Image 1 (cartoon, one colour):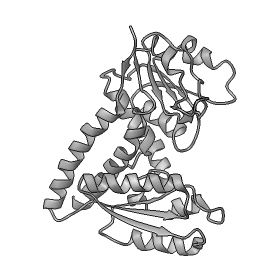
Image 2 (cartoon, rainbow, N blue to C red):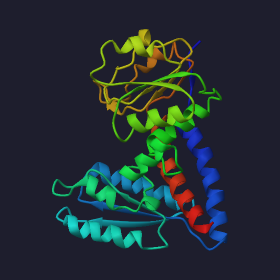
Image 3 (cartoon, rainbow, N blue to C red):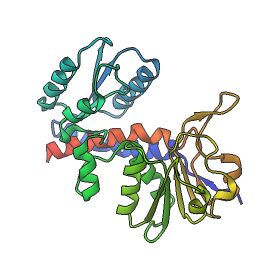
Amino acid sequence: MPAQLISGTALSQQIRAELSQRTAALTNLGVTPALAVILVGDDPASAVYVRNKVKACAEHGLRSVLEQYESNLSEDALLARIRSLNDDLSVHGILVQMPLPAHINPQRVIETIATAKDVDGYSVRSAGELLAGLPGFRPCTPYGCMKLIESTGVSLKGKHAVVIGRSNTVGKPMALLLLQANATVTVCHSATPDLGHFTRQADVVVAAVGRRNTLTREMVKPGAIVIDVGMNRDDHGKLCGDVAFDEVREVAGWITPVPGGVGPMTITMLLANTVESAERVAN
């Protein structure tokens, strides 16, 4: 029997409906959740991502503060603006769209954002809070992956989870979130020999390496949950993930499609972090 699809589109709509209710409750208290989004330069893909984030805010009662700057904006000027937003009590989350122009150090920018407003969860302080199991903002993509896994109703306690990828934005925080859910976690990557040796033992596989067909049918344990974070193009230009979807679907128990899986969850969890930040202020 083919795997059950885990629809990120459907789950995202459900979570966003709940966020709209939380936002309305905050507004009644005189607090409107607000996300400041900064875009530097004219990268077309970045412009689309920013537009989608601003649109999502408007649809669910959040206020967005969009600031767009020319690519020659100095690093000092950008950092000064971030510090100003840190001090703005009406702003609950700050996001600087990546990538930035080459003359601006992205890590310095991320570290300038106040931890209480780091709704992307990318700063060293946020990463440390996640590592220590302290309350903080989880990076949006792995946070969304956890919600997708939770939606299956399968408990992660005692399960073996394999994460393919070790990036700071997805792979590493994904592993930590799975550990917090009491899974036994193995992290694999581009230098792992015999990747299938590990994935065939996994009850859960999260593929986040950025290379199509990384996970194939013979590498998957029957009935496993497969979460595909990849965003690639096949030989015909069609969007695809890191998983050989058609063949893996015949073995797995649950699987996310691309598109329509992890993608819709990322912006949703950004909204969730922003609302949570506003709730902390209100409380």
